[in-house]
Length: 65
Picture: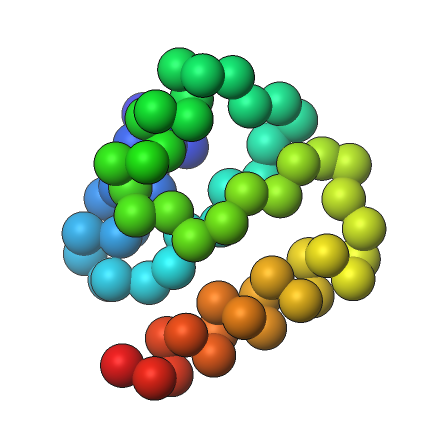
């Protein structure tokens, strides 16, 4: 099982936002991740502020439900 498959199972079971960390994104991966109700991509290397703001937005979105 790869990370995209794991994300799909996590999303189905727990209904939480999915944030992908990846070194690169190609068309095939992009299409596969769209089926996992992804929340955001973070491309490595990333800045600490980018990670913090993404997590904050994702967590705020889950609290509204």
